[in-house]
Each structure stands twice: as C-alpha cells, then as structure tokens.
Length: 112
Length: 113
Image (cartoon, rainbow over all chains, first blue to last red):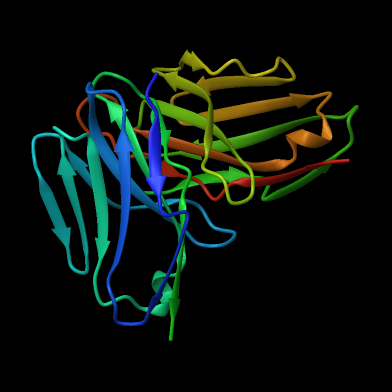
C-alpha cells in the first residue's frame, strides 16, 4: 500500500524566515497531495493542495511543489509568523480512491 | 455551509458503557469518514462511507460500529472500549469524483476509564 514519509519531524525558525517541509510517497498511482495544518486542540484544516497535472501551486505565503518523477512534494512557507506555529501533515491519495494516507507530521515553531 | 459538526465535544466512558458519536454535514458530500487521532500523530483512517454504503473498513475492532443513516449523518457506536481507545475521533466529509478536499469536523475527545 501507499506510504508517505515526512521530514523534518520538528522545525524551528525565526519569525520572517522561510520554512520547508518535505514528503515522499511510494505509489506512482497517487495523484492528489493535500497539506493540512492542525493547531493544538483543533481540527486539521486544508491549507493547500496540488494535483499531479501541475508542478507548483501558490497561495500568498504558502506554496507547494510536486516532482512526480522523484515522487516527492514540498510545502514552502515564506515570511513565517508566530501564528504559523502548528503541526503540518502532508498526505497523498490515489485517483479513484477515497483514502488519504498521511505523513507523520511536522511540528513547526516560529520564534518571535 | 462548509462545516462538519460533531457531538459530543468530550466523552468519558467506562469500559462497559455503550455510547455513540455523531457527525453531520450539509455540504451535499457523499463520502464520509471516521478517523482516530492520538496526540502528536496523524489521523488514522477507520471507516469510509460512500453513498451511504461502507466502502472501507481499516480492520477496526468490532467494538467500533459505524452507521450512516442518510447522506448527511454519520454515527460511530462504541461498546466495551479499552483505555487505549482514548483519542480524538474526527469525522470528515468530501465530494466523490474529481474534487478531493476532505473537510474535518472539530472532533470528539474520548476518554475511556
């Protein structure tokens, strides 16, 4: 079955710096890759997603890149702010399935 | 309405109790999900319903019993749980087909004593 690896497990950055979180997936049939942000005690919230027919997607300070050949995708957050501190999960999903496979998560701490 | 609601928010139950978790969405989504999440871990898929039929059961113990009475409601019936079942139980919903986004509810924090 699909396996998603996520690195790093924790990431500390200074406010204003950039943060990058990387994920690799195993099943070449996967074609949808969402990123969720989960603050303490709250629900996971989708922050950005990408489908396999594009290589990059941006939404203000957040961007996701996808390399289908290498089977990895990354989340980039620029100009980090303290409110970006949370756990971030990547996930993958196959075209005709309902199942999301999550990475282990990254705890991001933005120091002010 | 782009919200998934769950009740109760918190639940404490003994190992001999029977209780139910409820989930509701009014976005017209035809896929609904139950996840279990332990602290600092990713959500673990338990069950998926598609068009009110159970389509995925991730080898969940029979003490968890899902039910989908209609396209807007999803229940999880709990019986004879173990302390290790204590976790955050998340419901989610999505469209089927090309739009994949899963919307999560706020979860039920379950403690089994």
